[in-house]
Length: 497
Image: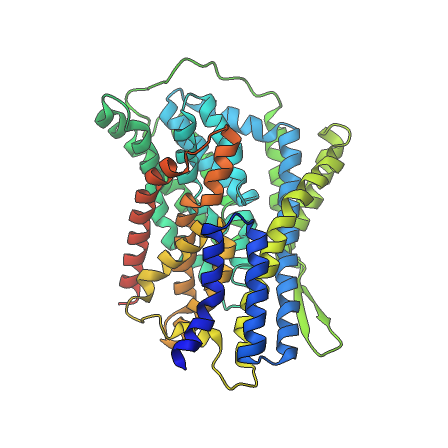
């Protein structure tokens, strides 16, 4: 009986993974199938109370609506910034700071990608930066690998804090941001792995690597410190404001000659193009966003919706996506070309529909599992069944790997958190462990796992016109990811010793 219970508890997860790996279906299609199967199992085996099923669907919708608005606003703002050449000029400026191509790669694939991940996430960073890396002389495959390694730590707070805000919706996330920032210190190694990849095919690979190693470590350290400096403002600020702060600090340090490679190396001569818009036009939009985010964080509360059947849902009015929309509209009118506003809205809606369907299906599925203890069969909830199979001694070690597995499969840190956050929270409570710390281990692992996400690899390859290179790319990124996951897990064991 108990084994059959475990089989039914695991069935939606196993089905999800099988369909993702062996069937040519989109993530949204797979998510909908998994939801239907979950609902059927709960209805006929657990015999869940119908009102609990309805409440779960309602809560799942509001979670999905939250991310819909965030992604819609973030993509809308990013499209406007691209059209008025703000993103292009940030890239040009970073390229012009140093003539050493290794430094340029770190500036673009680490600092700029971190910033773009904070702004929009969902595959945007690789699509924007990989072509720029090819432009400075990297091969397309190397550009994809380096972009993926860069798109890691910042993902824990990507798309304006979505992975925590939406991924752990309904959970007690009091200190998750603080723990996550601390565990994210492992990300200091990602720029090191980038320059190792760059040096691999060089004749004098040792010198090629060691010359720029201090700058690579310094770059990782700067993002970590800037994240710690701003996390107190809220999870929405870490990858956006933290990245901007890190960019300012690294540019200043390069101007001062700190950790600059002794020998400057170039792949080929390439004259840096000058910025085509004034610097104030590049800075002003993000200054406006920062001010509005701070004001919104301090002043906006939440509203509650009461439904006829007695369910009450609270909805947070402080939604970063709405702030991005309000910030982007005036710049589209003043600096943009005719029709930019309508075009940006269309692109944002197109990019948002698929994440909305995935989050709607996944969050509803998990909410049904959370409520599965409210049944007529007297069976324990799905989460209770699964949590019992997580060992207390090894939970801190495996939590990062669980998160990484989720983002590897789905290409989304947020979806990984939705899939596994409730289970890990339940296990943490069961064993008397800090829920915030365990969830932080999971999301830190999910951020690292994002570097080897199949969906992101294929998206970056598509932008560069590559075919059948997924296995080659995976071979290069998997070792750095496993090293970082092992370190995070070991830190987790030390924390809970």
